Amino acid sequence: MEDILNKAYEEGTKVATQGNVASYIPELEKGNPEDVGFVIMDLKGNYKARGQYLKSFTLQSITKVITLLLALEDIGEEEVFKHVHMEPTGDPFNSIMSFEVKNPEKPFNPMINAGAMVVTSLIHGEEKKEKIQRILEFTSLLTGNLETRYDRTVYESEKATGNRNRSLAYFMKSTGIMKGDPEEILDLYFMQCSILGNCKDIATIGAVLAGNGIHPETGERVIRKENARIVKTIMTTCGMYDASGEFAVSCGVPAKSGVGGGILGAVPGRCGIGTFGPALDAKGNSTAGIRMMEYLSRKLDLSIF
Ligand code: DON
Picture 1 (cartoon, rainbow, N blue to C red):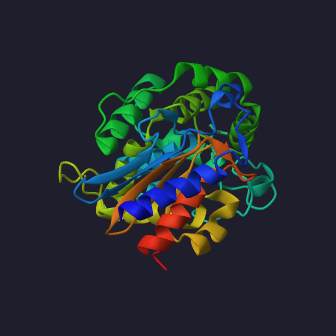
Picture 2 (cartoon, rainbow, N blue to C red):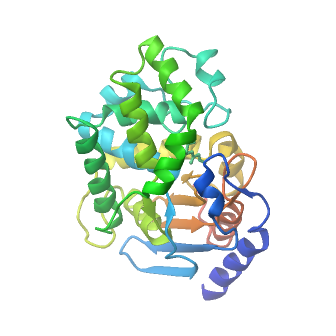
């Protein structure tokens, strides 16, 4: 086992500088591509780690898993999927075309930006302050890390430059898909994307999902079994965006990536995995993270297929 973990880390470092650190959110450009690490955690909370596994990064799109879970816990499957489909797009995560042209009545899935913003708008809470507080507390519940907070500088950086998301939100407002004030929902979405975490935090979330909602460290149920199942399924079909099909073949682990460089994996009945490597491929997925996940999957026979 130790050799496999060493080799997985070595494989990750080999491709760590292939690809580019996200620059469309200026603050993310400061990431160091050589900061590579991972954690693999079993369903009892025992874990093995390599590299920079405690380095904090912004979770970005990985938070789409968290908000989808919270919305499902808050209002249930039927209500959530009245507002968002559960179909892969084959288009980039911030594509406008994908639902404007093909499917204007609701976004394709909760993992693309449009769908994630709609999901965030469904979370219970009187106003923005209460909603972000609930998202932070729920993140703490899943990770077991009580210090969850968002990075104000990254949040402000995305808020200042997030015009693609702004156009998606206003488009959805114009068609009636988005209820509420688009500026408020955008702001909440930018805050959520800036939530900080490390490989251990996301591996723990992966282990919660892998264990059908039971927290690996406390043994307590933190989410409904059915909601864990729904989210793992959507991660498999949509979690790696327009690379989801290829990733299902090469790795076969339900996963969700973020442009901060993290990837969260959940291997049903076995373990959670959290990887980090800030350089991204053309589709916005971590090059080192994908390589390490693929290696671990092959050597430890983790594919669900
Ligand atoms: O909305 C955005 O563009 C970012 N805050 C998050 C995108 C993201 O992480 C896509 N992931 N690979």
